[in-house]
Image 1: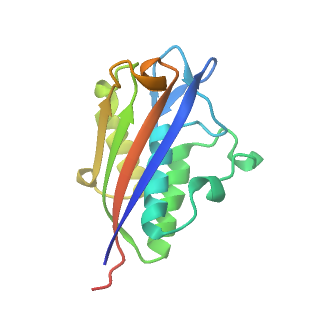
Image 2: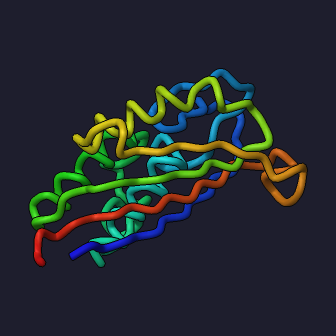
Length: 160
């Protein structure tokens, strides 16, 4: 039986932080604010996986008031979510993600993001999509106040 999950995350820009998206350190004047490395793409994907499993969200699993997750590498957390899925009998079939950022340009980094996410989940690269878009200068993304990401994940529980 197939299960679909949807994830969404948003983080505001902050001075003095690195910009990490899909595990890629992207050169930019500001990074994203957050308790962990604030990888908005990995966070949306984790929530999509957890949603397909009908499990808690990442805020419950990795609370932002727990010092253990301060500065955490979101790809490590994504790997833990993928392991949890496998432990519960799920196979990750496919994932597709969209990142909305007015700046910086993300197209040059898409392939590395796909590779990093696939590796973290232990799945084939062909099962991970990453797209980037702007919001045509509309909203908080368009005003360059932050970045948003959406993800969907398809899991198979092995039942027919």
